[in-house]
Amino acid sequence: MESLEKMGTPLQLVQLIRSLYQNQEATVRTPYGDSDWFEIGKGTRQGCIMSPAAFNMYAEKVTRNAGLEDSSIGVRIGGRNINNLRYANDTTLLAESGKDLEDLVLLVKKESEKFGLYLNVKKTKIMSTAATTPFLQNKSRW
Image (cartoon, rainbow, N blue to C red; front, top):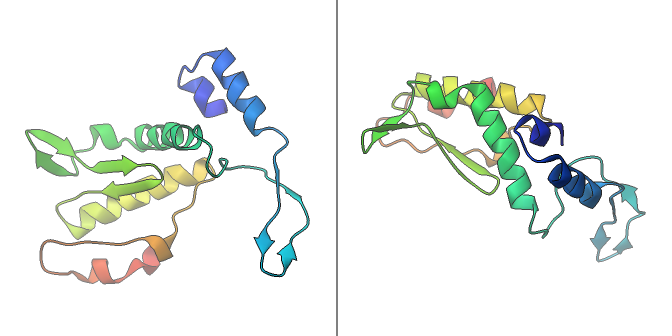
């Protein structure tokens, strides 16, 4: 919520969103029964129409703080430098070289961790339109 305030979100809206997410509890339903109820400390509500918007606000803050808007790393499309595309909780980083891509990933990773968001290497995919480089084969550095 602190991030929303820093981004200039009106205080009444921040308080409304905070009230939606306070004192959340959940249980896990399995074929063997439900787990005990537990408190949810962070994250967005599954299926809540506010969740994608809330996540996007954090993603925007991460992107701004990481300096991606001002970075020269990226791909020129229509005369503009594009280095990230985001939809819901997916982010695509664009670069012209493996080294540049590594730099972008590390910038976003470092900034995301400040907000309690962590890169899931198992869900990370790399697509190259050129010859594969050793960097693209070694995700363990992240």
